[in-house]
Structures are given as structure tokens and as C-alpha cells.
Amino acid sequence: MPIISNVAWDARLETFKGRDTAQYIESVIAVARRCAACGLPFGPGTALALAVEITEGCDTEGTVSLTFDPAVYHLQCQQPGLNVSQATDCIGDDLASVGARLVLNWGGTGQTKIPVLAYTMVPSLVFGEPGGEMTSALVSALLNHGFQMALSDSYGEIVRQAVPVGGTCACTVSGDGAIELHVDGALMHSQQLDRTDPGDAIWLEGARAGHVLVISGDNLGFTDTGLELGAAARLGTLVTGAVPVLVKADDKQSPFRGSRQAKGQDR
Image (cartoon, rainbow, N blue to C red):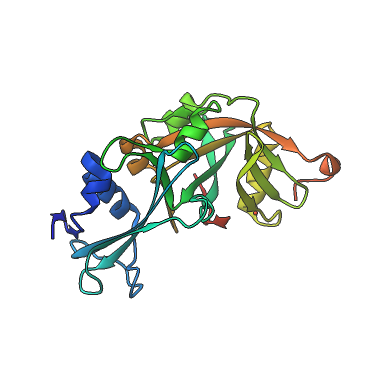
């Protein structure tokens, strides 16, 4: 039973993750807060166990695709493990998006409010040969539509380096506060904001300026206190882009009024 830091894991994981195994484990642990069995929080130095569910499939051209669904436990609650199964249908059918909204205060006097939409897909989906070079399906899709890789988790660097994405991407906002991110016509993420909530109202007002900063990729962490981007930046799975905002036609005369949603944070 190999151990990395204080985390016990199944040695068979290396067959699928290869040289990225250690970084993968560290990225999972970086955002884990509570035991998947007992629900109690992890204390400093607590002995932990990692269990991973891997689903294997392939596309019409025979390219292998894998989903990785990890769970972290107290070692006393669960032993490390790994289970591999074959997809019975399209491997992407069980993917769901999880995300949050936040507002960044940018500049000095008279600060600009930058609305941010952050999201990822769970479980993570990658393509490639087990043990070899694996490619994130989400990251690849976004890079192909004008998003840029972000190598730092600093919000300042992210804002300075973010560039407008291609015309195939748009964030729509309706009068009742529903926001949807579309990439090449596909709905990638949605959230329902509340116009009566002060934080949501600020976000929606900022979106009226015409663009939303989208932060996405694999290994993003969503917690009660904010968004964690360090693991994604280190693993090269963090992408950003300034996405144009479209107000739905029937809502243009109205003030700004769906995926799992994490609590947004203002910064």
C-alpha cells in the first residue's frame, strides 16, 4: 500500500495515471475537506485513504476515454481502492458541471467589478492510453474555442492575461437571473442567480458591461470559503477566457433578474 504524504492509495492507479500519479493524488487531496464515509473534516496530518472509480470507454475512432471519480476517506473509515468498469453507453452521459460565481474588484479608486463564472466537469474525462499521455476533454474543447492556458492561480495574473474568446462562445443572461455558458452551441454550464441577493445583483450588473471572465478546466476546487485554483495551475489544466454576454431578446427591457452550484464568493 503506497503512501504519498499522509495518503494511502492503490498502486494500480499508476497503471492509468503514469508519471502524473503523484500530482493527481495531491490535486485530489488539495480540495478534499471531509471524509466521504463519516462526513467529519480532515485534521492536519490525519491518515487518509484514496479510492478511485475509473470508467473506461472509447469513441467511434477507437480512442480510449477514461473518467476518474475519486473519493477521500479517513484511513480508519475506508481502505484505499481502485475499481475499473466499462462504460455501457456514451461515457460522457454521466458528466455534470459544478461551479460558482464570484466578483473581482479590479483597479484602484472607482474599482471595476469583474463578474467571474467558474466551473468544471465531474467526474473528469480524459483521452489517451492508460499510463501514457492523457488529454483533458474539457481543457481541449475550451482551448479549441479560444480559451488560453493559465499558469498561475493569481487572480491578478488571470485578469491581466485573459483574452476574448472566439465567436463560438457566449454567456446568455435572462431577466430572471438564469445564466448559461454555451460553447459551439453546446450548453457547458448554467446557474440560477437571485436578483434580490446583493452578491448576485453585483454580478449581474457587472455582466451588463458585455463580458464575463470564465475560469475552467480540471482540478478546480469549490469550497465554502472560495475557489481553489492552485492544483489546476500546477497540473496545466487551468484555462480562462473573456466570454461575451448576450441578454435574451425578450428581456432587454427588464432588469437582470441551471448543474450543481457552489456558493459564490466576492473578492
